Amino acid sequence: MVMRMKISEILEYTEFRSFLNRAKTVKTLLIGDICTDIYWSCDMTKSRLSRETPHFPLPVVRERMSLGAGGNAAGCIKSLGVSDLSVIGVVRNDWRGECLRRLLAERGIPDDSVITERTGFTNAYIKPMKFVFSGEEVESARLDFENELPISPETEEKVIAKLREKAADADILVVCDQFRNGIITDRVTDEITSIAASGKPIVVDSRTRIDKFRGCILKPNEVECAAALGKTPDRNADISEYALIAKELSDKMGSGVCMTVGDKGSITVNGSAKLIPAVAIKPPFDVVGAGDCFLSAFSTAVAAGFPFEKAALFGNMASSIVVKKIGTTGSASPEELETTYAEREVNSEKGIMNI
Image: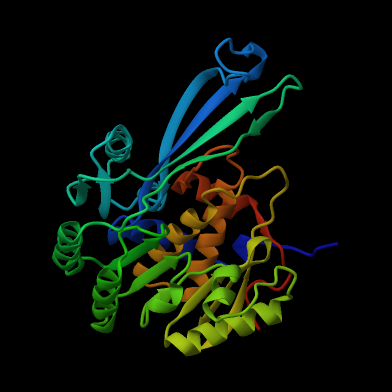
């Protein structure tokens, strides 16, 4: 039996309220790969064999869209109450780009630093969700709109100019590096690390290049961390082994690290290594968007002056809310965080632990 303790036993209520209050005044700049998540609900009970092709079509009965990738992280930051948020991203001159700008506007996020590239696709994930005869909803093969070519030199110059302009006034810079040919080019990476060297706090979430961001606060998961060190990821490793690779990445990069480890919680390294236990939740849950939500709460707390371990606890709390929102890339509101603080427990009887 897993012994647990309430969140309120490891985080004072005054600290919790301070986080929510300070979030309102944080000036955040997010730069990265933004996309649209599109869900098509398909009722297969209405499907009939096509006369033109030997296939059963997918009868779309409902369509919904949400911000994805860095866009979802921006939406999550906004949901926390951050009023001063700027987003630097790239879209294309297509319907997915129009949808993405509309989704940003609906969340109250300005798009004046979102640049339009003339060629290529606006990144999007289209997810057909089949409602089948058993009454279950099953996700079918995803349609990915990604670019085979990098952004143009002209667009890259515009991105760097926007970054220099906006970074000066920001309290924190959040980097979302997700796509192979996305906005975070080598030149943009060099500019980010140069800004970090000046003392600006920068939190980076990068799928395949986390080891390029020297001097930044790194937020990999355990697989990304191991890969950055040339190691084979081991999802069955124990916490002490995870802590070793987090420390190794921190030493290699000269940076603080906050590594998420799924249902075990997160590990922070900022000098010493600490385990921040996960918030206890029961199935079913959907982990899509959980990393974006963790990133949003963690970076906001860092900007608000909280130490890594407390910032990671806020990240764990926020992501525990999102994973219960099945079939969508959701966010965590201050009201939901308030309920989580008051009612939920962590998977530990010792709270935050040195490891």
